[in-house]
Structure formats: structure tokens, C-alpha cells
Length: 68
Image 1: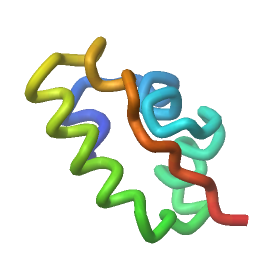
Image 2: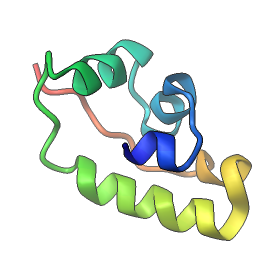
Image 3: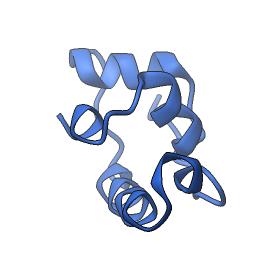
Image 4: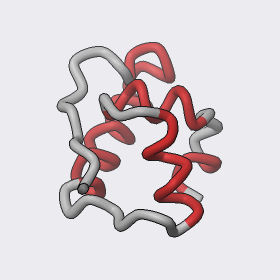
């Protein structure tokens, strides 16, 4: 829901978070657990989206590692 509210494609969100598209897809389908720090990363991304739109969102975002 978060990704769709901000009109981001899975590819765009994955790039902003520093993960593969497959990770975002698996999180959304419930195949993988959501990393504990993802809510903080999404909050930071949301702030960047509010300030600079999609283009500003991916610059300098901290990377989130997919749980194994």
C-alpha cells in the first residue's frame, strides 16, 4: 500500500532502498519477512518524496538489506 500511495513501481522502490526488485515483490506477496528497519527507511524515503519528488527520493538513501 505504501508503494502504491506514492505511485512508485517496484523497480523504483527497490532502487531507492538498494535492494533487488525481487525483494520488494516477495515482501508484497508475503513470501519474505519485512526487514525490521524497513519502516524507518520508508519514513526517510517519504520525507525525501515530500521534499523533492521521485527524483530526489533515490539520492543518498541508506541501503536496506533483505533478510535471508
